[in-house]
Image 1 (cartoon, one colour):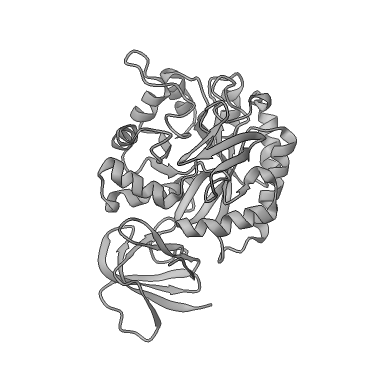
Image 2 (spheres, one colour):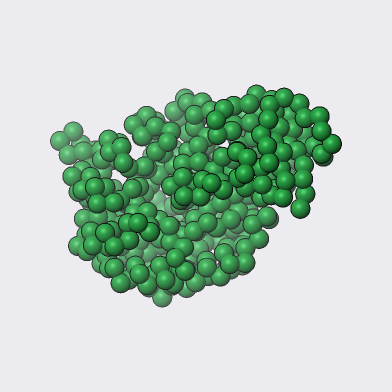
Length: 385
């Protein structure tokens, strides 16, 4: 494999910002991260002073670029994964929806089949599965299909996990539904339980966290809102230090001020930028399918014909730019919300999530507006400008 240097870059490493430095890449891995000018014999790729970040990890994405994980198509997953590099996403969790058990099984089987042979040099890498439903509340379905909501079941989740070849890393569930606590107890050491599509109140959310739940799915959407006498799951998400939270940072699913509140409450280590994108991302306005339901895409919004928001068309690089704009924070603090936090949660931070020697060379070169100029996937360079 190739060996080269990315030189003259502003590097956001795990420990510091290097105003001008270089990264030595060898055999798809980061060999060294240094400040100053490289004077050795290796081929140099001049970053021209642009920003070098770790590749993004999207832990909640259904699809994009005309494809969806529920299509159960290996070719579709490949097309999605290839296009995700253009927005800086180098790893992701293929995310399913609340559909029939047959369709969920087919989707899981196709993800496993694709993952077994994926080309992790030419496309974003599937590092697992996020099972969003079917063990959710029928009263907080959002864009999920209410016909297929199921009672939480150890046996059913065991079946899904076996079908997925143990690739399910995150499960969105409603902890207040009968049987959810038993399922949580059985799988809490194997799967990250993320509270979402729920009517759980403040105390019920905190009780679920005490039993092993760790995440909140797309905070502010399909949950119980904050009231001063009933803080709801929003209040629990803000105040429970053992909870980390996803947030769709598009300014559509949540007001910018609400995003700023969540970021201030959770801090930069317990906050995940996600897209929750559906197949219309990267496509033109019009009608699209989401889990067997028609979605109308117009402008920045994707909605069911009922008016309910139906996933997003957000790109990860725009999510990070929005976070900076909405919160006023610096890139030095915020970059980890798109990569290192996710890698730590998935326990792959020894391989991914930051710019550090020994890790995969999953990197992106961006400008000041977080436009992706180049993606590097396990050392292979993909230029977009």
